[in-house]
Image (cartoon, rainbow, N blue to C red; front, side, top):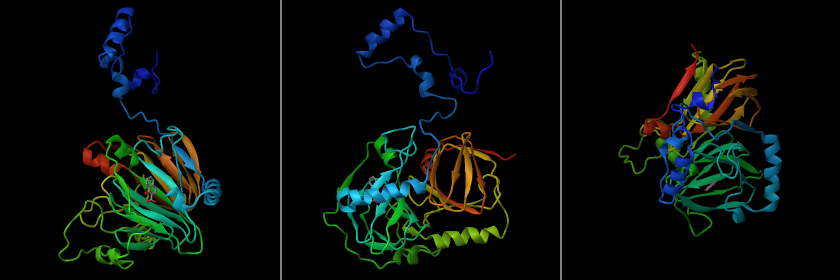
Length: 359
Ligand code: 1HN
């Protein structure tokens, strides 16, 4: 008999023993003592390769936006605390997860609205999708947000959002909620007032920490980056300048990771974030990695093949690639993709793996 690569036998490293009546009676008896036979579950616990509940999926912005605007008429940002539609993975319904370890959602803040100040032990990122000029305040400093900006809210920092522009503002939130659930380590509290006091001028942290320099007597007080807005004009310019050198990675095009300038690590302790440029007609070589990845399309048009399924994308769409799924990108125009994953978390634990298929 030829083994299908997806058969239980191929994926397993041992055979699950048969259940005789005698064994079944024994299993029943030990259950009452809080015991369970490892040999009956071994293949579920230890797989040859990642077996994920997470499905590849794409959320079209043209479908999502009207639904989010409808939420804008149903509930205020204040009443909702955060008016967000969770991007929930179809393979994990009701889980609040986009991947096994990460949460993502699209948040709407209407002109004149406030999302009240609070803090939590979860790390959060914002990736601006639509609208211009709303702010988020983190640790006493406001930053105005524009499309393509990557903004972070490190663990346990006070944060509130407001929109003093005259257009709706929509961004993608990415949080490590499932990671903190796994560790039972969630803490949260409201600030008590709608807004935290502004104590620093807008642009202060980018000036201090965002010019490849640090204040001369800088002392580290936390793991996350002291920069909290990585503006798109700067990231775009960086990949644009790289392009002139013409050294394209077969799997990634031109890809950069967002870093904490203090140590070159990811901007936050649990979430890695990336931006990549793919030129028109550049078909990437297949790539797989253990970090399930959320993509947000910034510019361009094309499709990606994820675990054999095709996902056509245009700007502001979100799509997700599960752990160890084979991924190729096929831009039909010059395209820019933002992405985030738990890679930094896995790297710190020594379990990250990737496989390129560009030989
Ligand atoms: C949160 O604090 C924000 O601050 C967004 O904008 C989404 C989802 C779950 C828990 C906290 C925000 C969130 C969140």
